[in-house]
Image (cartoon, rainbow, N blue to C red; front, top):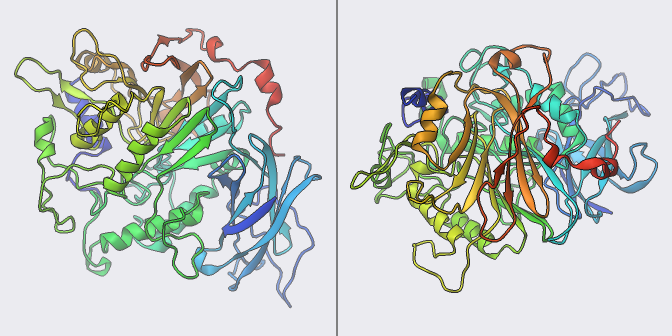
Amino acid sequence: MPSDRGLNRREFLRSTAAVGAAGTVLGVAGCGRSSTPANRVTMPGVELQDPFKHGLASGDPTSDSLLLWTRVTPTDADGNFISGDVTVSWAVYRDPELTDLVTAGSAMASEPNDYCVKVDATSLEPYTAYYYRFSALGYDSVVGRAQTLPDWDADTEHRLRIAVVSCSNYPHGYFHVYKEIADRNDIDLIIHLGDYIYEYGNGEYGDTRDVDPPGEMLTLDDYRRRHALHKAEADLAELHRQFTWITVWDDHETTDNSRRCTANNHTEGPIEEGGEGNWYERKSFGIQAYFEWMPIRPVADDVVAAGQLFAPSLGKTWRKYSAGQFADIIMIDTRLWGRDDESDAGVPFQREAVRQYMSEDPLCGDTTAHRDILGPDQEAWLHDQLRNSTAKWKILGNQLILSQLRVTPGAVAVPPTYLNTDAWDGYPTSQERLYEVLQGNNPDGSDNSEASAVDNVVVITGDIHTSWAFNVSPNPDALPAPTPIAVEFVGPSVTSPGLPIPGELPNVLRTTNRHLQWVNLEQKGWILLDLAPDYATGEWYHIGTDAVVDAPERPEPSELVRVYRTPSTPGDNGIEIDLTDPTGVSHQTDPGETYLASRPPKAP
């Protein structure tokens, strides 16, 4: 159950009211909606069911490879489970009619991997759509579509269009946002910034739909069953089927406000005595189920146990995806890898209060004050990726608001106060070091004559269930207004609740945060990040409030509510212009007929 330690999203939102051709086997799953029997394999006296009940998915794209995923559920006609390994065939084609074969092979679905299968389809062509299918036990899965990343020059004439989503709590409503995106065909890639699942049981955090298991996730079986519930959801399954995903977890894939050594929503102690188990074991269950059920590869330097093809012990999700010289997509983990315990400084707080915080949690073992959100190795890697990237655009996929969010602005001899310890503000030393790197300085703040500022950084952020647009600035109170060092586009949730408070609260936030360009605290939706050679554009699409996602049928299409653009001109690293069209049409970022005509057909 949730604890009162620290400041989680719900507490944060409440507090704002007070302010006003080859393949390698890795894993597999199936949806069964369109599955058709092939040459049925029967065991003596046993009639089998269609084993593809959880859809299929593609992810972790490069310019020449794709990770393909499905799961087999081996059951007889009465639904009884049949034990034993299952051979799964897979094939990749150039056309949706499945006539032009590119590569094929077989894999094994086995119990140690929860009968999930991952296949690494390699030797593919850049920026190319492929169509794939799995077969097992005499059944074929549905057909999926997957797309490799481009390998473009910096000044390509092409566009890369990315749908950014996060925070899809099953009990809080229906996945209309996923369906909205799945119905489109003007998108190249999906980036999910975390909270793909939530740990709570029925009635604990939303009551629109029941979850499986009905209680809070504590065991490996619990985490696997919750992932299975989501994969079988029709709208989510269709979005996986039609588009390739890049994913990273936030906290709820394990439990609320997870970090390296503890979590808010965890009570240490044996389950049979009313506790929630050992934190490190529970964390490992969440990591294992995530790598089994999501289309993501373990990285080469992680450790995989014997018999487990893709259940790494460390769970390293931070990695870079390259689209040639055009864009680097840099994904980081602000939760499980190296994040120190969260300060209990309360709200509002000053930076020094959290900077000097030392955890009292015996699991964390603090002996000196430290405020790391990434951990030394991930932080060094991130700084290196940003400084050494030769790509025009650097997209930073991030869970928590990087920009400063203040209750009161700074004044002479009066430090500003801040709002949310569950953000980079709660780890100010890490935040300041990243700001220095973006400005071309050493992380300790000293000048670096051999370095230059990192231009064209777009931070995309989830977690907070609300929409924000920031000019990232080390000192938002400076006069004249400081030159931004990046832009940050914060996306709304798919279903998780925001803060439906009308009135002047957004204006109050704007007053105390001059670098904040816009905020919406209530609507659900997603962001379309449109990367072009000359500019990057963030388009916020809102589908409605809690009442909308509570309705089984989507009442109306989403509405384009905000359009912000940042140029690729060196030194111009802020929001250049608000292109919001009051008619709800974004003429300035319309990809045009040439782009749409070049889009591959969707999977049938």
